[in-house]
Length: 202
Length: 354
Ligand code: HEM
Image (cartoon, each protein chain N blue to C red):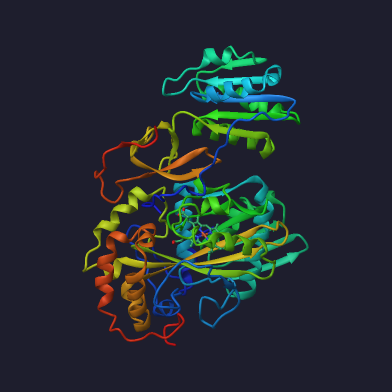
C-alpha cells in the first residue's frame, strides 16, 4: 500500500456540504479561520437562529481571524478560543449535555471538522444533527503511522513528522476516529532520497 | 505458559520470522502450499467460494489449518504484541463477538486436532487444553474475569493468522476488533472503526470495477453455518510475517538488497487465505486472514506453478504491482522466473500435479 496515491477521491475521505439553517431548539456552531464567513452567512440568512445560537470560534493557523465579525453577529453565546485543544473540553460538555433538537454546525478546515465530528459521534449525537462546510485552508491533520504522533496544519508533501522526524508523504486515506490523514515514510526503501516538498494543501 | 515445551512434538518447527529468518517449509508444506492462481493471469474479482472441506492433506482439510509453523508463529505474535500492544484492539461492544470466536476456535481445534487440543464443558464451566503451547485453562464461558485477558486476545494468541471482527449495522460492516501481527502492510490502529468502503479506500481499480459494492452486498447476507473463503496475495522479501506500515521504515530497505543470486531464497510469494464467518450470538462477521509464505526456490520445484507464476507476474497491471509493493523488483523476479517457463500449456486449477 505504501506507494499508492489514488488520483481520484478516496472512499475514506469525507465529503462536506454547505451550512444551511435547520429546525432546532438550539444551534451549536463551531468554526475556525475562513469558516467564520460561512457562519456569518448562515446567521444572516436566518436571523431568528441568533437567540438560540452558541458559537465557538478559533482563528485560522494561516492567520485569518474573523473574531470581530462573529462577535458582532449577536449570538446568545460567543466564545473565542485560541485553539481546538483549548476549546475541546467546552465542546465535549455541550455535546454531552445536548438535548433532542440540538443542531450542530461546523465550518472551516478539515482538521477542525473531523475533530468536532469525532467528538459528536462519541457523544452519541445523531448523524443528521450535524452539518459541515469546508472553508479556507486545505491544511491537513496527519497521523504518522510509525510513531502515531499527529502533526497539525500540514500544507507540504512530503513533510517532516513533528514528533519522530521521519520524512512522511501524505496519503488520502482518512480515519474519522482519529480525524486525521495517514503519513507514511517516503524514503523507507531508499533512506535519504526525499523528493522536494510541494505545497499541496493550501 | 512455556512455549519451549512445545518443540518436544517434532511436528512443529522451531524457526524465526525475523532476524536470522530461519523459517522454512518442509517438502510436505511445499506440496500443500495454497498456490492461488487457477489461471495464467490475475485480476481482482469477487472471488468467493463456500468454505467447505477439501482434499485430505491440503490446507482445506480442516476448518482452521494448524500446520508445522503453528508454535513459531504464535511465538512471533507474542513478540510483536510485546513491541506494539496496539496491534490487538477491540472496541468495548465487541466482547460478545470475541466469545463467539473463542468458542468456534476451541470447538474446531478440539474436534479436528484431538492430539493437540481438548475442550470439556460442564455447562458454562469450560476446561481448555492446548498442548503445543502448554496451556491448561479452566474458565467460565462469557465471564471475562475468569480469563487472563479478553476472550478475543486470549484465543487469537493461540490461532495462526490475523483476525478481524466486523459489526453489522446501517447496511454496512464496521471493523471494530482486530489481532493484526502478520498483515500485508495495513494498519489496524488507523483503520479500526471504519466501514467496508473506507478501509478498502487505498485499493486501486477495484472500486471502479464495482467489486467492493458486490462483495459488501454478498457479505451482508452471509448466513451462520455457511462460511465463504477467498485468496489474496502479494510479494514479501524474507519470510517476515510482520510487514506492518508501523515498521515499514525498518523492513522497506530490504527490498533494495535483492540480487539475482539471493532472489530465489529471499523473495517470497505471500498468500492469504481469508475466510468470512457469521458469528451466532453477536451477528458479527469474523475475518481470519491466514498467511502462507513460500520462497521462489521452493515454488519453482513445481513446474506448473513456476510456468504459471511467471505468466501472472508478467501480465499483472503496474497499478497492482505498485500497490502490492514489488514494482521495483518486478524485472528481477521475471528474470528469475523466466528460466522455468518453457511456454508449455498449463492445466486449469491450482493443484500442482493435476
Ligand atoms: C469483511 C472483511 C474484510 C476485511 C476486514 C478486509 C480488509 C482489507 C484491508 C485492510 C485491505 C488493505 C487495504 C489497504 O491497502 O490499506 C484489503 C485489501 C483488499 N481487499 Fe479486503 N477485506 C475484507 C473483505 C474483502 C472481500 C470480501 C473482498 C472481495 C472482493 C476483498 C477484496 C480486497 C482486495 C481486492 C484488496 C486488495 C488486495 C491486494 O491487491 O493486495 N476484501 N482488505
